[in-house]
Image (cartoon, rainbow, N blue to C red; front, side):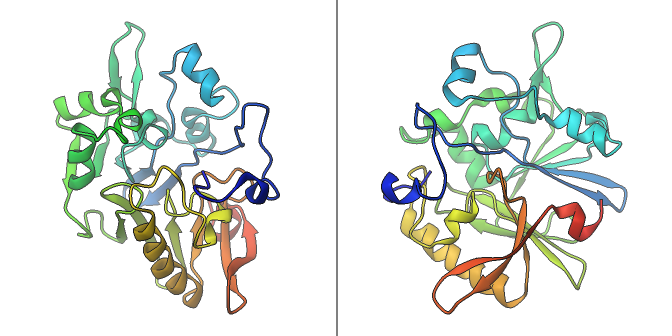
Amino acid sequence: MFGIIPKSIWGEQISSDSRNRIPLSTRSLVLTGNGRNILVDTGNGDKWNPKMRSIFKIDTETVNIDRSLDGIGLSPGDVTDVICTHLHFDHAGGNTRIDESGELVPAFPAATYWIQKSNWDLANAPSVKDKASYRQENWAVLARKGMVELVNGEEEFIPGIEIFVANGHTAGQQLPRISDGTQCLFFCGDLFPTVYHLKLPWVMAYDNYPLQTIEEKKAVLSRAFEEEWILFFEHDLKHEAIVLEFDGKDYGIKESFAVEDKTGP
């Protein structure tokens, strides 16, 4: 998760277990309004065999999307749109599920799944480095059913949601920015997987083009600080959302909070 940063440094910030795993979340975001219920990313999903579940220590019993949706009065069938930031398994694994007959089916049967074309192309013809992260079980059935809509660049495909396309982590990572004119929330995805990645050199080994990631981070951090954006973290277990501070050298946390405390349910 921290690339070239040695464990002697990152280990002071976050502890690992005996298998060198650190605690992370796969936190999704729900946007409701204007007749739509929009889900940003779907997490790991529950299609994992015991071996893989053990390797990643995936826990879908304590927290899962169905239970979380139910907590805000929604069911999977109520979701109208799924914005896939990219198709890595920890972001798109919940796109599909296995039904009672053992068949792969869409997890959100009434939804349109929005995916950047460049990411779609890579996912369906991955490099050796990418191959393990892209699993067709998470999108092939959606394509067969005509539920996938491909997006080109930063075009606005849902009114009121801007898209920032970052290519350092993987081609065509699309990160939503939502604003009501006074307050702005930015979904950090894998550009800033945790608050520790606010430090520019802290770039994941998963990133295909780390120097590009650093430039993308610079661009977002500068604007996010100046305009006091809410940064929403997908993988940080402790910090759901923050507002930035800047000491002239490094960006840090001015305020950390749960999104519903800041923006309403």
